[in-house]
Length: 212
Length: 186
Image (tube, rainbow over all chains, first blue to last red; front, side):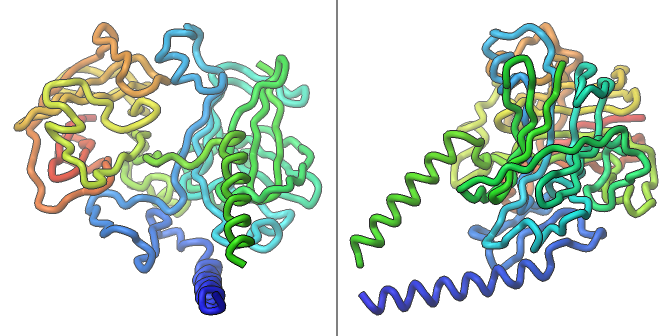
């Protein structure tokens, strides 16, 4: 039993060493095409001469929630209202807020390509009208609030947002959760007549209300 | 000690399952995107795009995972969603030509039919949908048949990227030991 515990401890400390290494190189040089997987942790030979798989996988969410599935099932004939495409970094043992991400500094709300919000229809956010179209989304985390920026510089890489092209900024409250969420997650939720774009990672949740 | 560990393990499982119910887990076939010009977003922040933005593909990447892909998972002669999950989307940021036909700028769904020696790419206007389960040929914009090339190494995860050609560019799709290119001219 003691042996098992000792082995467990060893494994844990080894693991944390690895994490330490990862933190040091938290952002790849901008010349990097993708945040590619460190070669020592590939489970299977990653032979892909065309396009390697990202460490922070991309994902897509729609509003109405699960729109593509509803459309496939022919239960919806109206166009979608909104869509977000973003990449999902993971904690890997790190404390995100305030260790990896600094308060009061812009964060790309994802990884790799800039996080994209498509509005298929004009929307009202905190009494401000935002026109239909594609936008880049980024945020500035603070201790108790986040500033969410909707920006017109699209099809770009997430680093170095061009703040001069902000279309609007909104301040939303931070909610602390009991659980720690491993993967950064964005999802639309329906709340009465409103849509809320939930952004969650580690023990932080933030919601941006959208009225269509 | 063993009991405590076991209990801890079950608690962890329990909480993991709770979380999984409320928020979406990470997809088994992760999504990815490619641009033409290749790596446009990175070039853009470095202020060195060589050409204007022309196209983008957004697709999910299933893995071979030891399976027989062509003639197995992907049936010969049947419409294939060319990805996983949400339908594969190709967007043109300017008008282009495919197989001599004009294609207006905009978003399209891309499907394919694999045969042993050729692939047929299908450009369809039913966007924002899921897979190819309700594929509607009435919404096709065009179909184009190209050779299917054998490659020497196995590509584990379905891969798509754009390459420059003499007349424009092509979308190269590779998976397992086959690749095919959709030629697009500007």
